[in-house]
Image (cartoon, rainbow, N blue to C red; front, side, top):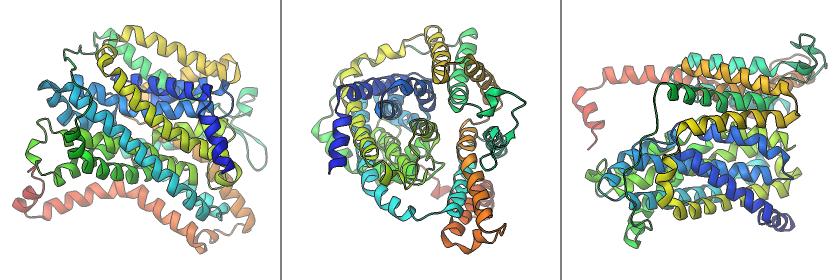
Length: 510
């Protein structure tokens, strides 16, 4: 109880509440602007949090995380362009509602559903995480190695269209993680007699460069080509949902929130998957499936509840096992490490106040998100009008300032710019940035625990196959690694052997 009270005092302090509000507001704006992603927003603002005392910076990032997922629905409904990938399914019914003059009704329902999904998943996080941490506290070096391998294996799930490119990105991240001192012998590796590289390549400048600076370069390229955001011509009238609407969408919100929480807890998934599955299930269970695609309120509510529920679900494996649930939590993992919080089962016993602060902070961030959403919906069209020629210089400047503020050295700025150029090239080649980040974060964990295990077993590799938990993680890792490769081929084979009319009936939108 003392830990909970201490956490309440931290979260509800003036500075913490101010940072949650500013972080959530920044997240909503970032999510609402097409081209700016959740990952980019967290990576861009993460360096600013290092100057804050205690957990204030982490609370700000939680606000950015929640706000950005919700903010994508604003542009999806108003201009038929998802601000984030998680809001892609919201277009299917949100934009038709706006075209029928019900933009305010659609935005109100999306805001309500987003808050519902976020609060639901946070409650699940509070209930599930301590129980899972008690089970995981008995893990030792072999299990942690297998756990790291499992985390690395999800790169095939978070990759772009090419799994090979995802594997290449993961290998690049693992290679970057080997630069610096050997964790067992303290010998120099790939330092090239550079004093800077002796401590390893700084994680934050790479993160900012890959996610923020590269996107800034892409936006700059769009500006030169004459691309610009579409102007909004929609008038927003009523924004508060009626009791009849809330009563009708409540089962959809509950079902979608449960789906989003479960999907978020599975490493390698994300809000885009949760939103589409939630939309599909909402249509399957609806009494009015014919309305979907033409402005259904369930079709607008379902993807938002599912996508926002991913936030709490993705924090479950992050906090209990040290495995990021998606790209955003992979970036936040770096922020936790900088603050001295070692994620995993010991986090709950060594830092109980911080754990409860995260729980309460995430809950408050979702509530603040709802307040900001309803208060600012009538101004949403103004957010869409921010020209990129104004936005891009601000983003690039923040990238440089944020990178410099970590270690107060210009070398970090140059590293950030180099990572940004590399990220720009890789994005043009259809690479995903998340595998690189996962490789950088989990590479040292896998290497250190592998070598510790072999030292304990005198080089006997059979130790990994004689411990049930370790073997289970390795089997799951192999399954996770190969299912995206084998799955499409099996599905194609099944479609070829299946009866044509039967398959057409299964895939029919009706």
